[in-house]
Image 1 (cartoon, rainbow, N blue to C red):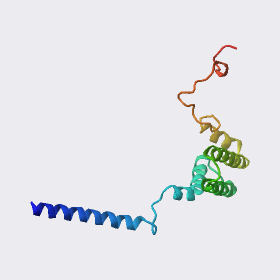
Image 2 (cartoon, helix red, strand yellow; image 1 turned 60 degrees about the vertical axis):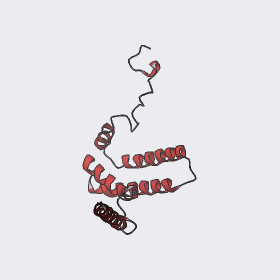
Image 3 (cartoon, helix red, strand yellow; image 1 turned 90 degrees about the vertical axis):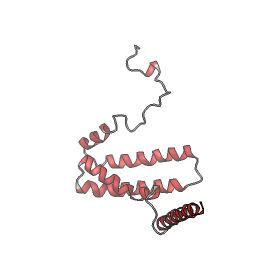
Image 4 (tube, rainbow, N blue to C red; image 1 turned 180 degrees about the horizontal axis):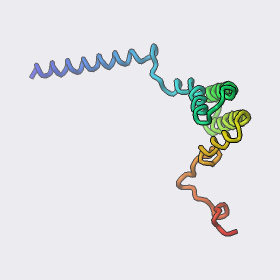
Length: 145
């Protein structure tokens, strides 16, 4: 029985040592890519996605890059602003995105604008209706007036 207890203790210690070593290698010296890492490179990733989707010219890419980088700086600053409530942050976020979108629209061709709008389901970037929200008869296109 004591042999079994020693074996079990040895396995547990080895497992803890391996876990501790793994944790030490991924802590401050080499942080795992998380929310902050995604935030840092999202401007470039967004530019690549837009470029691929809309077939942006090199000139358009160079004009779009600072717009997306500025948007990212504003979003990062907003995330760290503890003086605003969540609804205030959401409102400010919409304002930032709307501003960036209008700046991007200025450098896109009409075909590219159509492509980006159609990719959003034609809803102008609005979220899908929540399941417990029902449309009223006055806004229903099929209802008689």
